[in-house]
Amino acid sequence: MGGDFAPHNVVAGAVDALRESHGRFFLYLVGIQKRVQEELAKISQGAKVDSDIYAVINASEVIDMHDAPNAALKTKKDSSIAVGIKLHKEGKADGFVSAGNTGAVLSASTLTLGRINGIGRPTIGALIPTAASPCLLVDAGTNVDCRPRHLFEFAVMGSVYVSAMLGKENPSIGLLSIGEEESKGNEVSLEAFAMLKKSNLNFAGNVEGRDILAGKVDVVVCDGFVGNILLKFGESVPAFFKSKFKGFAAKSFVNRIVALLARNGMRSVMRELDYQEHGGVPLLGVNGVSIIGHGGSTPKAIKNMIYRAEEMVARKVNARIQQAMLRYAR
Image 1 (cartoon, helix red, strand yellow):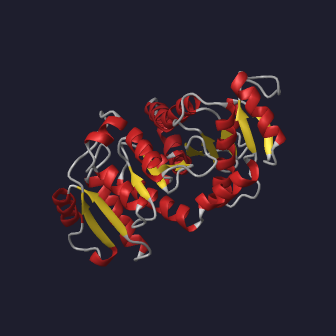
Image 2 (cartoon, rainbow, N blue to C red):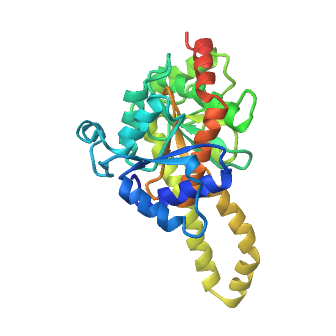
Image 3 (cartoon, helix red, strand yellow):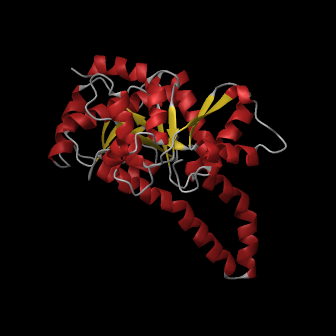
């Protein structure tokens, strides 16, 4: 029931995933049962989905985007977020996906599922396209204020995630700062630098904002305040380029011809920058798989969120994080 276009986009994305996967997984659609079933009936017309690979679980309440996360979880215990996370906690589901209230998903995931041993604070990781291969930004908005230890944990979790999901052995890690020199940064980043330097992680040192899109490292570590600003700025880039491209084409007939010739190339580039391709961002550090989507998620984004959850389960990301914390976190 979460998101700006729920439940339609959520159900449509779920149906697309079920059709494409050919029974590879089973989905619980959690929400106001009548509304979910009405959407299923509309979307499934002409090509019904096998009822053996999904079930609709009733949740009578909805946490909207304006609800205070912790208060909403206490007063709306039968919300789709609370019920869905509970299914995961009880082992009836292997992962949880939502485009709803981010704060509520964070709180429910952390409080209900608990944290992996050794993790002080869970973190959101967001994949960013670069000139080389995708780079993982951690934290992308979970923790506004961090201690050095938290930044170290983000680096460990980010390294594990990139290794497991992108197949990179020994990913390189950069600490986002105001200069490459070891002496640059605030007190928190300076202390985190020292911890990372002593570890067995593949620490490349400080990186600056301009190094991210250049693909200098595989994982960029920062606090959630900086990370979220960076992420939201990045999300505005595709729309900005499209606007500039249209403005260029409108100036003259010659420009329109040039724009038409370049259109396919631009579409390819824009696809790499499109959040829908990744679907959602993982909440790393909790005892479960929790994928958080954009409030405006399209059916395509929902479908890809489901695939990310399936992939995290299959590649045992949490078990790898636990092993890494035992190895590094002393």
